[in-house]
Structure formats: C-alpha cells, structure tokens
Image 1: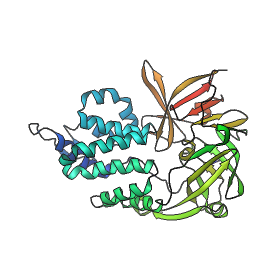
Image 2: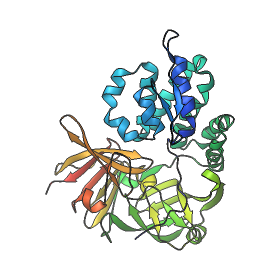
Image 3: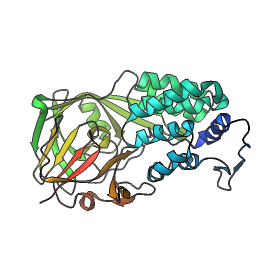
Image 4: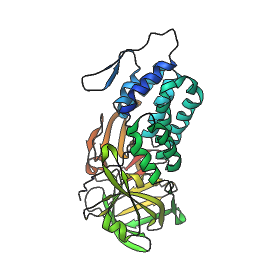
Length: 362
C-alpha cells in the first residue's frame, strides 16, 4: 500500500531562517573578553561561523541524529547556555517535548536579558515544544511573536491557530489492554476496524508512515473537522481532526490527520501510534496497552527516536550508540530500512514509555 503525501505537517525543528539569530544568541552570551565569531554566508547560502560551537552547525543543518551521536563530547565542551540548547533539541528526538519546553524556559528565564536580537530563537524553541505537546493556543501566541522577526514562521502560526480548539490526544483502554486479531497484509502493515462518530471503517496501522492520513471523502463521511491552512512556501495543506476514534477497547481523542484529495485507505501513522504506551505486533494480532507487557521472551533491539515522527532505532555498541536506522523515510546519518528489515519477521513491542524497541527472541 503506497501513500502519496502532498503536504507534510512539519512540526519539526527546521530553523534555517533562525541560524543568524542562533549565532547572534551565541555571541550575546559570550564573555566580553572573547573575540567575536566571524559569520559569513557559504556559497550554498547557509551560515558559517569559524568560532561557533559544533552544536550550532548540527542544528542549522537540521541534523539531530548527528547531534545525538556526538552528544557527550558536545555537552562536555559547551557552556551552560549551549548545553541547554542541545538538551532542548534532543528532547524532541527522544519524544520528550516536556524536557524541550523545560530547557527553552530556562533559556528565557536566565538569559533573556542577554539574548537581545536572539530572543525570537528561544521563543520559537518554546513554541516548537508547545506544538509538540498539542498546546496549540499557546504555540500560536509564541509563533505570532516570532513572525514579527521572521515572516516565514507565519505558516506555523496559521496552523497552530487553526488547531487551537483541540488538545493533546488522550489514550484510554478499558481494562488497560486490548488485543485485536489482525494479520499483516505486508510487513508492518496491519488492517484494523476503526470506529469514529458511530461509523466503522477499515484502517491500516503503519509505523513506517510518520503521519496519519485520510482522504477528504472519508474524512467527511466520518464526521471529522476539516480545515485548510496556508503551508510553507505558499503551499496549502488540509488537516482533519477526529474528536474520538476507537480501535477495539482503545479510544483516542483529538486525532490529527493529513487530508489528501485522492481515494486512499485511512492510515494510522506514528503521529498517533507514538501516543500509545505499548504496541505489540505479532504475526496474527496487534495489542495496545497502557500497562507494561510481559517481555520475558523479548530482548532490547535498540533505543527509539522520533525524528519529526519518523521512527528511528539507535542500536547499542560498546556502551554507546552504534548504527541508527530510520523506518520508511530517509533521515541524515541514519540507514533507511523497511519494516521487514527492522522487525525481521519477528514479534515486536514498541515501548514509547521507556523508548525501547523490544524484539521476541524465539
């Protein structure tokens, strides 16, 4: 089953327009005795600084995997200001927007009087965290402030404003766990019956798709709230929100979908699946649980990461991180793999509480 995504919901940390601001931020917090960093545009139009810390280079290149791989050495060589920025960004990658928000607020609290023209950078960092936490009204207010300094942020303000009547998806499961009979139609693709607004429809669960999606026709039939917002670079994207949907004994509220105009199956991607504490996939069933599962016959295959809702797995090596794999979509410094390659035809548990991928041993 192939899905064409015409418009991506990029609630990510692509901040190229803020690189000048970030470099200014670095300069503002340097001691007055230090020599100023030299900033010059590269032939590609990116911003370079001879004296800027490594974390600025990773962030400006939207390379969070690279930042993660060099986390220990970067933290060891950075001052408090730099450490807080690094921890805020890696919070996004580790599916911990609360941590990102915490460090963004620390930056604003301690360094606001020295941020000067770099204040919009810290505000946007906080806005990104609020957006990840689905606190859309708060995010909209922050993005509106950022738009005064960088007009290209307006599309994020428009999106947050359009979603401000909705909140974070809440997952509830009667008796804590529900098991659904389902055989994958292909590796990692599980058909399930979904119900919303009293209407049943077929949906497909896919960890190799970052975002849940639905056709406009089906969104209308299922009673979803459809909205059109101006996207990045003048694009228009269509979003839909389901007030409540149910799969087995599980109910999820305020579920966000991308809407496409062509007739395609309803897909449940990582944007919703990452909200569920435990998901077990076997050759004949899918289990959703809010309580820990029995993992005696499972071993840890690696740490989970979510790069803009792309599921990645960091495999351990010599006490650190070895290879990083991305599922279904290319990510810099990660090896692109298919569900078949990642899961190997074995039963798996996606554990978003501890951020671990468990694989059955036998």
